[in-house]
Image 1 (cartoon, rainbow, N blue to C red):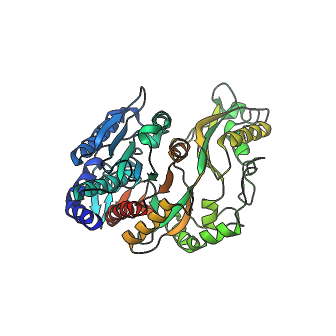
Image 2 (cartoon, one colour):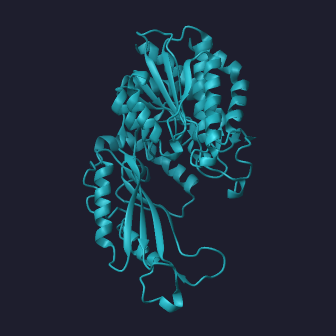
Image 3 (cartoon, rainbow, N blue to C red):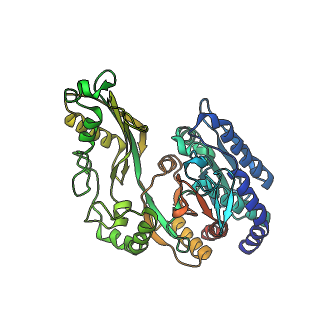
Length: 460
């Protein structure tokens, strides 16, 4: 099957490349209500391709007030063959050329082997890679595995629909292996196989002082400025060494074992290089007892995502603001639970709030726990072989600092082996300006998926 499927994939690449342009032109921005119809248009585009290649039950699933999921399947290999569930998402973050883009974000533009557009790396390249690989396998004839594909339209806006869908459709989604195809690799020439993701929780701190904005000359010095009070509060969330100073924050954290530190050691040098290239920060920061990669992979964090209050326009407005807000997220490591962290955070902020202001701590995202994959599972071994064949070099093992909350739901309800298979490039500007995907990695991704299916069938 492999060589024939690869030939089909190679012959179909010009059309695959055109399809990538097509879906990137659809501004499927799930976070902006006025783009809901664009999200639906992208979903319909995926359904059309699924039906064209011969998948069955290809349709959108949409509940009241939510954006659609897309599901399709091909079960022609029979009940004794392995079944693989592929997950990725087709919705994107907002983008305007005025944000600083060099090109129009929804007009795909190829420059030096990279395709620039919003959603190129996060995560429409994965949608196209996965569907192109399935199409090539079906065209080759007699596929050795069954395939189910689930594409989400709300990954960038909370994923509430898919949590409900997975819980209510465990039989429909039942599979031997679940492939999460999202994320990116730190180096386009060296694949990295992640066996863990951090969890997440997010919240806001709202500080309120006077009942309205005040003249800073008339009342300054007598009213605790909410911006200053907020700064005083958030300055007490970290210790000077970069650790989080919230009591109980590390209570559920397991220490990094010598065995796992050894497993992660090969990632230290390439990650340090990536860190310098991508961040552009003048110097590292954080817990000195851990390498840069370990701080990302195995340590929990509390990050300020945004802060606002008062006047921020041009010129001067001598106002004493009535309120200020900070947006904060935490990344969780194994054994930490969102509810425990939330209780610790609420208690600490309540304790350090000065009596001269009122504070509301609002949980924005219910959160998800961290996720760890068995490094020795049959599926992980198949993924290792597939990447080695697709890239020509054995992948390094790592843990990812980001979060894909739906992985916990799949693990909870499907009882399938889980693997992460990203094909983006971490320097591709996900969620930022000039987002792009490496077209060479798109082709390697299709090859790698075909190798994965072959190896998985051989294991059965």
